[in-house]
Length: 396
Image (cartoon, rainbow, N blue to C red; front, side):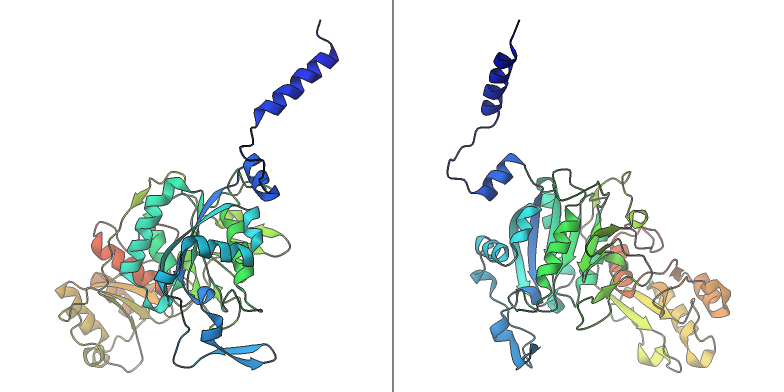
């Protein structure tokens, strides 16, 4: 009969051969990662304030106050001078806590002011995410704040059923500046992105988070519901018509009921957008026949018509809105009716003007943000079998 000592000796020998460390000079961090694999996260750098050169971009007014140098919009290192390895090294030097959450890789797609992004770049980002989908557990996008909501909406629609977290974040001040919000936003973003990964030792319980979101100022928000609501404060984004997905403080407070449930969705990437779209706010007393004219003739193929309240608009002939809509609809202009209000439901059928517009073929449905509505218009113009009122990625 085997003695207890023999059993313990055999068990100790087996334990010693179970893990072979290939390099005796591994650091403690490398050894920890080797023994306990972490989620793999791809950080995609697109530019924005977070990556600006602070010395060339800002004027120091003293007492901790800074402002952008007039006429510059910030100075960005050229893409040729940025190497993924160096960027990752700089990032981990500034925010070493990121290594507690994941193995990070960096890909630099471009390094520009987000005002210069549009459909071409959104498609480029969507194709990159599609290509890397099987290689990573989650994705972080460093992005400028001005058009972050547009990019988030575009990615959510083009990558329906992606089923992995795609978290956009950025900052109001560059990472290298003393009072920058970039450091906390990056930590919060990777916290949320890896919360549902089984390999994440920092996650206390499973979270079913697999959508495109914006993490900014201690809030995690559905990307296609988010808007930039302030130009300079740190909590610059909000979702006026939808609850936050999570709030980050001492604890991460997840709103599980608000997370997107897409378990049954088949992943269906679509990479086409038609940019011939504009937003048209209804202004009292303005005749659209003079203000906008023949939009279809000029190449516009879709408009997001921003009505009053629940979907009301001037119905008197002298103001011209209904005659103008009738003319443009006959030519083939796609029209989606939304509200100038930040929140609330749409019911254009309650008013004569709204009912007439609906009978002309103007589409309407539950409230979307203006940013998401124009992106979805670009999307639906290319995929004519999908109506604007059909939910795709939790935008309605």
